Every structure is written in structure tokens, then in C-alpha cells.
Image 1: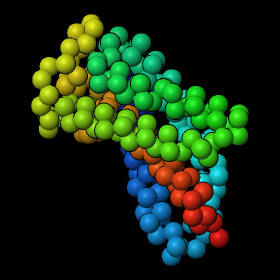
Image 2: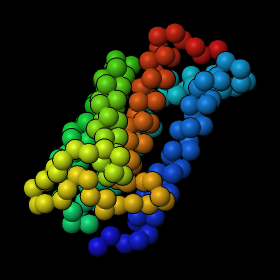
Image 3: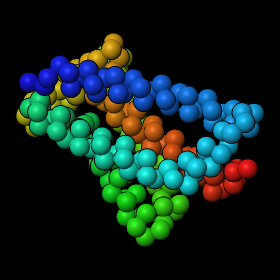
Image 4: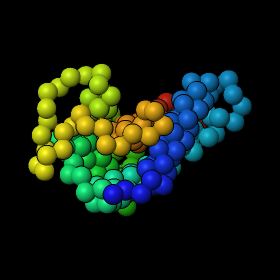
Length: 184
């Protein structure tokens, strides 16, 4: 049984990450008109991998421990999300060690967008907005079964979607930074 406080912590953290992502996107769109924002994105363009590694590592640890604590085996779509999520912190760390982080942004972006598609589809299944048949997992949990639901919209796939969205945002900013050099 998962303690209530852990579900609440994951839910409120996800809500905070959602709000921060909206703010980041608004700042990105208005970066040319807002004084000082270009400097912020220049920093993100250079140091995005460190934040992405932190988010990815923490997300992977929380995801793995949550499944252990809850006793629920991951379903097929959860495994698919893991396939695209778990390699990201490791790949970024190796890229940083080899000083090749800039070359990794297209791969991080492609993994993130694919992961966003997988987790969004599973979120739609759990919210009842998509029908995809019964997806049986080893151990019997159904992909459409909603066993984590916080703040009226946050499911476990939605948590993954938000984390993949941050990866995609960081990779996009890094690509734009290195392609166009928008730093002042």
C-alpha cells in the first residue's frame, strides 16, 4: 500500500512541473520581447543536459520505487514508456563525459516525443477518452485501470508525459541555441 503523502507529493510535484513548463513555453515564445529572457535561454541551451539528467534520474528512481512499494506490475504501455525514459539520463551523462552533449539533442528529442505519444495514449486510456481493448500485463494489471489519480487529472502516465515534455523542451531549446545562436 502506497502512503497517501507519497501520492500527494507526486501529484503536487507534477502540478508544479506543469505550471513551470507553461511559464517556460510562454517565456520561450516571448523571448525576443522580454528583457533578460534570452540570457536565460542561452544558459538553458548550454546547460540543459544537467537539468535533464536530474529530472530523468529522479523520475526513474521514483517510478521504480513506486512500483515496488505499490506492488503493481507495470502494464505493457508502462514498459513502453520505460523503454524511452530510462536511457535518457544515462545517454546524457555519457554524452557529457565525452563532451558530445550537443550532438545528443536530436536523439533526446526523438525519444521524448515518442515517449510523450506513448504516455499520452495511456493517459487517454485511463481517463476513458480512448478505447484500446484490454491490455493484459504479466501479473494482470490492465493498462486502462487508473490506480493513481491525483488532483482530478494526474495519472501515472501523465507524470511520465510531463517529464518527457521537459526533456523535449530542453532538447528543443538546445537545438535552437546551437542552430541559430540566439544568445545576445
